[in-house]
Length: 184
Image 1 (cartoon, rainbow, N blue to C red):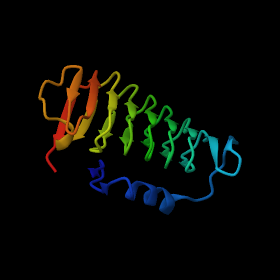
Image 2: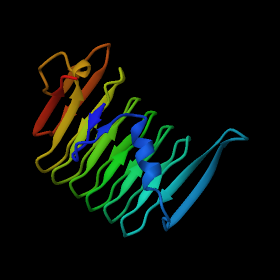
Image 3: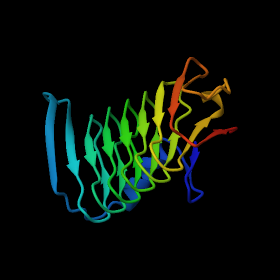
């Protein structure tokens, strides 16, 4: 459970609902579907525009690029790669082992269930790791950034480069100016 910067409670089920509520007509620069296995699932490569986009992936392993604009990008299920752009973005890989990378603006980056790699780029990024019993890696990048992890994620207060967590989690944290441990 997370609280985003606007005070809304977010978890792995409410983030996709937020994407669904906000979905409207979205112009895509390119969208490529690739068959992963006959009759099983399709992976998508989705590229946003230079405007403000709301992009949502599929249940497969998608690649979603927000590009310019203030984008809301949701990977949903699968091992997704989600990339922000140069403005302020809201990025979530969804469930699965995801890589979520903020762009040059002050971004919100969310890792939900799975072994996630979460990173900011420049400016004041906020990175939230799920309290899910998985291995997550967080790299904040340049600027004054914040990383948040759950109480069960951190049991060793030596947040130097690696933190051993319960039950057997490992959260690696680098280049973050502030680390918050949520007690709920």
